[in-house]
Image (cartoon, rainbow, N blue to C red; front, side, top):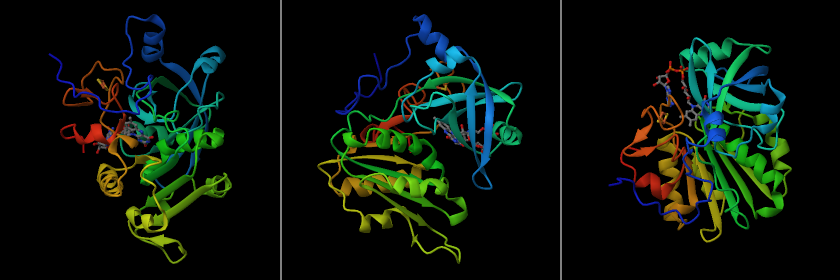
Length: 302
Ligand SMILES: Cc1cc2nc3c(=O)[nH]c(=O)nc-3n(C[C@H](O)[C@H](O)[C@H](O)COP(=O)(O)OP(=O)(O)OC[C@H]3O[C@@H](n4cnc5c(N)ncnc54)[C@H](O)[C@@H]3O)c2cc1C
Ligand code: FES
């Protein structure tokens, strides 16, 4: 008997939540195979985060590698370990992958000490993605807290590259303080995208900050949300997306039209090690992207 919660998501794209078929050779090769990759840039963004540009060394493998916004890779530092990292760049960039990594422990610490010219391994891509095609014809509301802007950057690129597919695009981004805001060097470029509104807010301003101050939900005073015509993607710490999603829910936005990315400790990324389970759900296979209705029905998900 399956213990799985029936998937209620009316918006699920056919390619989402599709577990790899381990009997198919190509699928297995893509998930088990580690692609040797060169760090071609390691760009400091803040005191804790760096943006890495990784180029898969083999040309054929590089050209074959494709992903959709919301998916992640397992990044391997030989002899040190392997970690799950969301792909942060454009899915149309076949030259290099962009990963934004916060230094928190052993593997991320070593990675931060590596420079351009060093080699790492990449497996993947893994997991479900944001249903960008289902969002066609609707407003998109992209909400990020802190490092949550890293997975959100991919759908921002997608929405820009397919701009005519969507109505209004709104990005709301909150950080603890101005020093922790990521990718601010791109904000002017993003604001030039047709009908795109970008608002930022910090909890603890410094003397140079002249923008919004408060919690991310305070930005909703300046952003009308049309519950009948909007999809939301919310990335950030669980406490943040819980508040944001309940707020949106109170505005009448259906929970099946809000998408979040769940982070759990992951080891294999492919449903083998049972490290990432929430009940009978594997966040590496069934997620990390879930609609909020599903998340609310997963015990201990948030
Ligand atoms: C699908 C997915 C996407 C992710 N995307 C990104 C990303 O884009 N950028 C990024 O910087 N990080 C991301 N992470 C988190 C990243 O995987 C962890 O920070 C990393 O595994 C820590 O490894 P470490 O060896 O440096 O830390 P460790 O030495 O293993 O642990 C150091 C500290 O980090 C905590 N930690 C470890 N792993 C996780 C985790 N998965 N989630 C939360 N806390 C953790 C530990 O509890 C401990 O307190 C993602 C995780 C998942 C599952
Ligand atoms: S990470 Fe191994 S089962 Fe999900």
